[in-house]
Image (cartoon, rainbow, N blue to C red; front, side, top):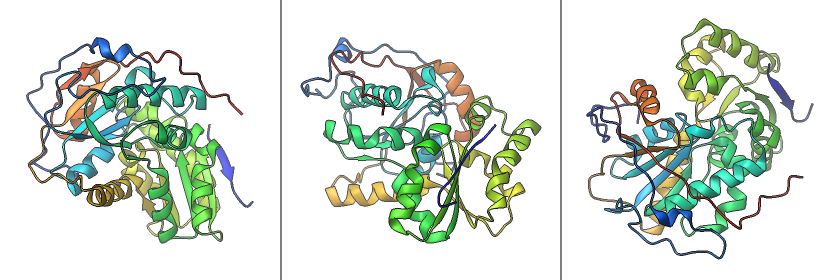
Amino acid sequence: MSNFFESDLRPLHDDYPGQSDGFVRNTGSSDYLSSSIAGSPPYPPGANGHNQRPRIGVFDSGLGGLTVLRELYRQLPQESVLYFGDTARLPYGTRSQAEIVQFVREILHWMMTENVKMVIMACNTSSALALETVQAEFPVPMLGVILPGARAAVSQGRRIGVIATPATAASNAYRRAIQEMNAESRVWQVGCPEFVPLIEGNLINDPYTMEVAREYLAPLQEQQIDTLVYGCTHYPLLAPVFKSILPSSVQLVDPAVHVVAAAARELEMLGLRETRPALPTRFTVSGCAQEFAQRAVHLLGCTPVVEKVCLPVLEGQPLPVEP
C-alpha cells in the first residue's frame, strides 16, 4: 500500500576500480570507536590502518547507495571511496527521525576515524531527516541527495512526481526544495514501502515487483506528471520497470547523477580533487558481509571485498525530541 502526498491539491565499466577476487572478510573495529561524540573529540587518522589516502565516504542503508558509487566511478574516476551499508538496520524508510539522526551520527563518527575528506549521504531518508542536524557537527563537507535532485527536477518539468520511502515522502523535503526553487511547480509524492525490501531481496524482475510499481505510480499518472524523481537511491535499479509503465514523455530524474556533479564542484572549489589513480573501493557493512557481496555482484559486475565493521556507541548524545 502506498502513501500518497499531494502538495497544492559509473554505468558499469570494465575498468571498475574495486577488487574482484571474491574474498569476503569480517573485521572488528578499534577500541577508539567506543568514544563519545560529545565534546567534539579528535578523530585521529589511521585509527584502523586504512588511511593510505583521504577517501570520499558514501553511505546508505544497503545496496541503493551503489547507484551513487557508480556515478562516482563515472564522473570522478580518480577519487578513492569508502562505502558503508547499514544493512543490519535496513530499511531506513520506516524509521523515526530520532533513529535516523542517531544512526547517521554513529556512521559519521566512524567515518571520521577512517580519514574521509567528504561524505555523501547516498540515502534520501538520511538526507531528508538528518543532514541539517548533523552537518555542523563534523569537520568535512557533507552532501545530501535532496537538493541536487530537486534542482534537476525543476529544470525538467513543472508537474513533478516523487517516489520515495514513507519517511522521505512524509518529511516533504522534496516538495519544499522544489517549490522554493520554483513556486509554480506542482509536486505529488508517493511513499513506497515495498520497493527497498524487494530490491534488497533481489526481486527486481519478479512479477510482483511490477504489480507493486503499477500501484505506486498510478496516482502520479492520474496527475499527468511530466517528471519523476527517484526519491530513494535504490530506485534507479527499477528503471526498466518504471520505463515499461510510464509514457516515454515522462522525464526520469536520478539524484545520484546530480549529487556527484555537486561533489565534483565542491572538491574543486576546496582544492581536494585527487589526481592520482584511485585506490580500490573499500566496502563495509554493519550486517552480513557475505550477503552484501553476493547481492552487489549484479550491480558491480564482480564480487566485492566486504568488511563487517562495528559502529561506535555514542554515549552522552541525546536523541532529538520528535515534534
